[in-house]
Length: 394
Ligand code: NZQ
Ligand code: ZN
Image (cartoon, rainbow, N blue to C red; front, side, top):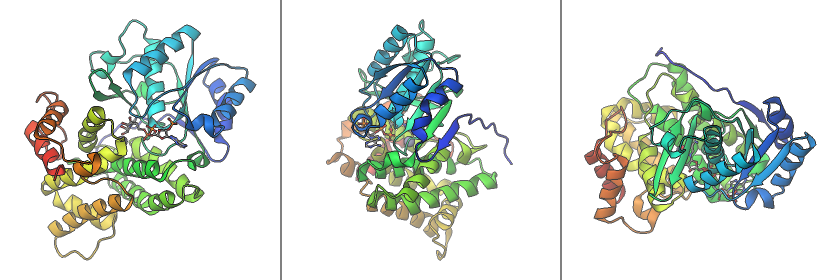
């Protein structure tokens, strides 16, 4: 096997009423003054916010609520959160929501613990994180996997620059995961989540660093599970079995269990981040729109790997040759996204083809002005990235 380090310290409390354990969980991790972050209306409307607040107050904690996190969360809102955390002397940050709220909580936790450093310097890679306040979360959307990941993705809204920061300090102390909290999601939000969960494993699975067979088998089982239960949840958001399988898959897909020993790839995510940074589209949609163009551009580097994916994940076992199997696996994935109502090209995503100038701007941003390449499977320089965006624009 390949060597690896695996660090996934988040305590998971999974099942009905999990959110009611918020107060005791924060006490357990030493919190006393808690800043609670949430998004727009969903958590207040469902009564979840009130239930969690009660749990915190019953535990004798002092609490301040701060709502308003937007999807594709912004640096400017994170700065507001940091200010609030400092004013109240917060020693714990609790997120109630999906990836956007949890990522904002991670940013606030880093910013509040490092008052002398401009928060964005961490995202630009100019500074390394050495401390952060503890974060916990009540998950309401199975998608980003932020509840267990070491990542936090923010957009500098003044520059439309979307970036991720990976550090062990981003791992939440605990995640309270009650699948019933996802019953209020719209079919579109669920479909975006299904896409993101699949993509976290796809972006790890297609790597030149192979040889950890159990990891591959776990990845394939996870993807089969998501493909099986995803459409059921989209069809019936109150299907507990489907939503609980997705919720657990979302955490395992992004805590790195399905990528041990492999170098980080995440090319599709990087291509997608430019789209949501620039145009504000939902994260899951940005990924489904880029999958086909990326996969067709790189699969010849390792067609056997793509054929294995077709066979073990999609059970396409009757193909005569490797190339056909590889292409069929890619196309079947595209049909799956389409069946969920997800866009599978840039014109479908945007409602129009992008202009020549927009494609060049995206490639320039994604390659950081031509200074970085994406991926190890097939290194993608600025010109490659431009060709992939152009292919997705057909
Ligand atoms: O704001 P509210 O009213 O709560 O509505 C939200 C939001 O509009 C709604 N929602 C969430 N839970 C709900 C609900 N509506 C009804 N019922 C519920 N139970 O869903 C909308 C989208 O929420 P958001 O948090 O933006 O979605 P998601 O979890 O997909 O997170 C996306 C963000 O996470 C980043 C993405 O780039 C994007 O910014 N990612 C974070 C990662 C990480 N930290 O590890 C990894 C991912 O690859 C991803 O990049
Ligand atoms: Zn993602």
